[in-house]
Image (tube, rainbow, N blue to C red; front, side, top):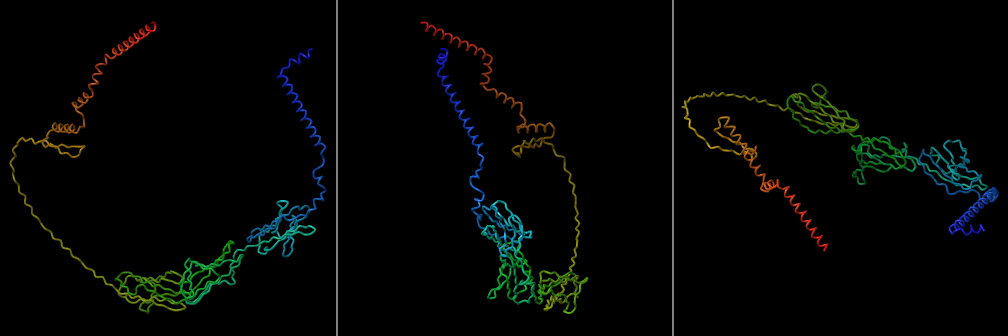
Length: 492
């Protein structure tokens, strides 16, 4: 009977709570059972997945193979060349690098076979095998074989190309050249390298190269491309150093300096042939000489006497260019005996040249000027005149004002003789210029400050309190009356 009463006392809310609790316990029990099953399966699983694939021998059914071709490389001389061979499924097989032309084995797997320390092998990843050659030499140019030692040998070939910077060869290249003016000259330059170098010609001093075309006309160029530089009917202006520059985009470029010398007999140019020299002065004679090879130069007086340096004569030479020289003679304290002809002479192994200058004396005349001074005496006569004392007459001239500037006035009164009068004039000028206010003007301004409205306000001010209070009381009385009337109407 007690159990039944307990069942009927359970409400709807308790019933829902009981159902939810039962479902939660059932879910927890399912999770526990599933965990037990997983742990049991994990405990009994002892076979590796690889054991279900089959024995190791079954994986060797596919032999190793190359993943792609070996890329050829082009490297400059002295750098490092790297050939890469990629292999898949290598397994227990070996990779070897062999030189293709002479079948020399260089490396076997990771071991270096050759005795040259310039070769090395690396295996950065299981599928990549690199052959390193460093430093690269010209004889390393060629092809290399990557080989796998399968039952049927598998191989791939990659090649190395070695770039060689240019090198000017002595054989076939001109040395310094000497020619007579008017002859034809050919300058040659040969260079080796890989790729084949380009040949460029320039003047060392930066000037233009003068070439002649088929009709013999001269043309000027900054540079010339080609192995041979042909100069037709060479002139003295074409003398100088020429640079043969070889380049093939593999640094560094190289050059060779070839000197061209043009021999010719001397020639002399004199700027002035006749010169007048004042007596006692200094004079300078100059001759410009062109000659190659270098000439011997000297001065003659009168065509026979050789002039030597001393107190009277000063000799100098200045080299202007490879074939140009300026020759100078300075004569000090010119006198009549120094007049005559002076000859500059230049000679070399090819010929001789002369230039003549004639000097004459210029005499200077001195003029003396005499100056005469004349003195004049003046007599002065003084006359004394006696004047009677003037008669004193009182005269009061009118006062006048001379205006100078708007901001300043000066008063001139001729009859001011005493200090009091001067003081009066100063005070008057100050008043006229409104510098200081007078008592009269100050009083007027103070009187004008109190207007009529201000005076009325000051008069009413003592009674203002009473007016405000009475007005306020009247207002209160009126409000009270209005309130009484309003109340009486409401009571009715």
